[in-house]
Length: 356
Image (cartoon, rainbow, N blue to C red; front, side, top):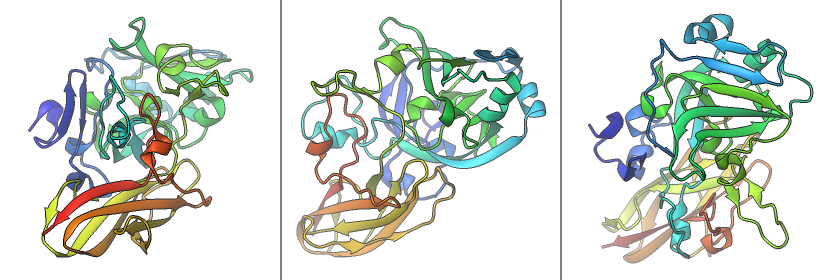
């Protein structure tokens, strides 16, 4: 067993703060990711919070500020469950660093996402109990973890718009895959925002604040944004996930015998959409074949896909692409998706194989 109860074969990018992803073959095994294989993205040291001492503050533009214990959350609010895929905004960044360096950022492969069954209270129910004001346009989440990358160092805080916060699928979760949240995944309470970048699903939640404006904290106002351009001087705040697709197995660089090869991966559409089609190619995109796609386990969950290819001798590049239910596709080249922070790479997935 590795750090934080993770598998020994996790790809550990940084030990402190702990950032790790599972090998593709491990991630491909199950529709729901075991906790010991679930990716871990942290900005600072994991805080140690004692459930007996922990409290959740709900304040800001509300008529009845709340101070809730774990027992309060379980007894006052109906529990809900959802199978949700969480994805780091830097997932598949390694594909962008191959185009051009992305200094100072973790070179995530395709495993900076995982799927779990979360259980908790609906954020909408908690905000309704607090009496969220009509002029509250955003809801901020704060946690006690402090990142050295923030300028100045500060507790982690981000926000989401009111409409997203009040949607019934956003949870304040205390359980994961039928067990209490582990410390590295946010115990005793975390936010789960399906279909949005993982940075909005705040771990170790201690405060929920209704506001008129988005959070002005570092990880909302500075980080997790596409940089400004001449045409867009304000940049773009990342939120909803774009359509994405990746090959998980065989792994990039694998050496295989000639003949039929099982190829598997995932595709993930954003809020309100599903994956309509996945295609694979072995000839640079001149010809494509359709892969079989599983139905999602929930509206916020990935869809696994699989196919069998008869690969020729030599070096082979397997490409994969997807379309969602709105008809949106993916950019062909990672050069089209490159940005200085290496966020949201959703270019066609590529793995290089050697067939003997």
